[in-house]
Length: 148
Image 1: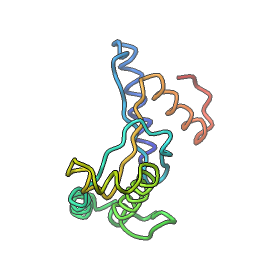
Image 2 (image 1 turned 45 degrees about the vertical axis):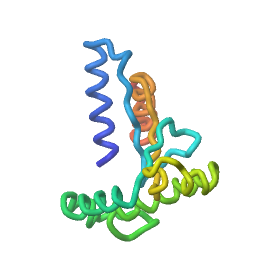
Image 3 (image 1 turned 120 degrees about the vertical axis):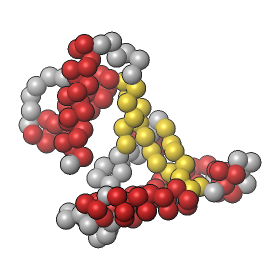
């Protein structure tokens, strides 16, 4: 499903790009369960608190029933995708703790950063980079030889 949505968005951006100057547009790429950004690839890091995790848990369990009882769970966790997402966010925060030191988080002047228990990695891309990434993924999945 995520792959098909990515390709639909890429097709829409291609059409839009033919009609409009999109040099100002930036697209945030988010990867989590099926593929992850390494810390070195992330341009943006979103800190996640326990409160945010509770909200995501509630949203998944009450609004995204297909994700709660997915018929193709990850090899890492047989359960709701939100549980796996949160596990990944915690691991990503642990990577940041290793790099910055625990005191950065626990003794930070910013109360929000002191409350962080997870991190979401994002990658910011211009239109051409996004279309290239989508095309490479399509080529690897479908063997397509069309140019972006």
